[in-house]
Length: 77
Image (cartoon, rainbow, N blue to C red; front, side):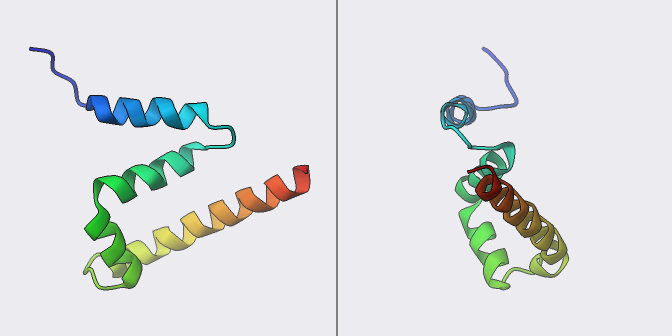
C-alpha cells in the first residue's frame, strides 16, 4: 500500500493549475482552500465562523497581494 500525504486529486489539481498561464501559487492556494473546505471558507468570508475574527487580518493581506498582482499585470500590458 502506497502512503502519501498528498492525495492524487490534489496532484491533479496542481498539474492542471500549472498548465494555465498566469495562474500563480496564490491562485492555487485560494482555489485549494475554497474547494477543500467550502463551508469554512464561506463562513469566514461572511464573518459567521468564530475564526473570522483572527483570520480577517490574513484575508486583508491576501487581498493586498492579489490587488498588487493585478496592478502589476495591468502595467505589463
